[in-house]
Length: 460
Picture (cartoon, helix red, strand yellow):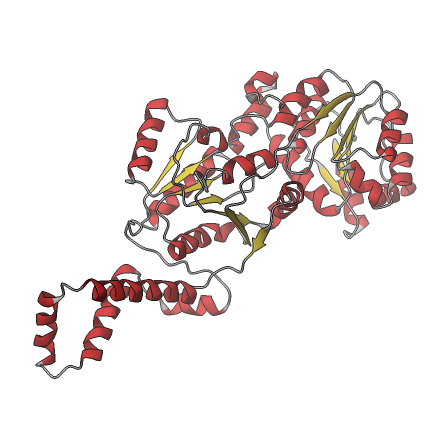
């Protein structure tokens, strides 16, 4: 298994380290730890890794570091199989390069007016992220020159070949300098991929990222498709419906941990955060509160979670989809321990779906998609729980003192049904604030109006 390094150990510029710090990442993924130092030496590489392994930063960071910031012509080229991936890769490179490059990475793909892309190219582009078909269109029009390209990345090369782009890829590579550095990333290594490697690479360094399989069948795995801005609402709804004793919510960055804890506090939930910027003393205090049950929800990054040893975790949430499949396996493995059943919920926004599909493909896990629960569904769940509680209390007897109070009301000519309904109404209103009219209208228009509660979970 590849070792994970801190980004500070990779010899990166202060500008790139600053961008990484802004994003809140604590350490490099295995493929980043292995690939970045090799790529920085100028050597070709073959990386066998799935989407979701963190490979974009594995090649994106060296691209940023090696580009000449004084030149406005294309110096690095990334080829992707789909426009969705091209947009995603360009976006990630731009986040990492915000303190170093004055010109952003430019995505070039079909489905967008080519005139708009030509205009953007005239303004200058040091890094181009393109689909093969659209890039060939530009080469035929002479609107892109690859003569100064020093680095070429074939991202998800096997998918590009499956989509019939082999001739386009070879035509593109022939228009780049023979002295270029070529980086090839592919989940599988069929014969056509090996042919391209032999033809267009020089003594490549081979990196294989070993992945773990899910070996925890007792865990019920579920996911929801949800907009990023609505994730906190959905998180609290699922918690309200399931009423768990202990929950771990995983985020990718330290900043997201802090923001989510602040949000949960504002909604009246008992939550603590734990991440790499905290002192060991503070981490110990957070974990002590979580083990004792003083805190119900622990929001954590993957790095900080390694020291968590709590056996009775009811639910694990992937608030953000992790960079690599191994992290997903480790996260959900926090629940369902010692033969107990556990639940793992993933909240997947649009830009994360590509990565999440890769997780599902590789782990081969049965992850069920569920619709976002409505406010009405939460009310029904709470009502049923309340009725079960009442049934249990009746069966336990010892109701004499309370019965006397009810008799006082009966003498005032209230019916027993009126009294029971009023008590139930008071209980439900106390435990769950009712939605405002505009919130109810938002429910009918599929917008979230998450219920809030000002209490801990019901203890079991």
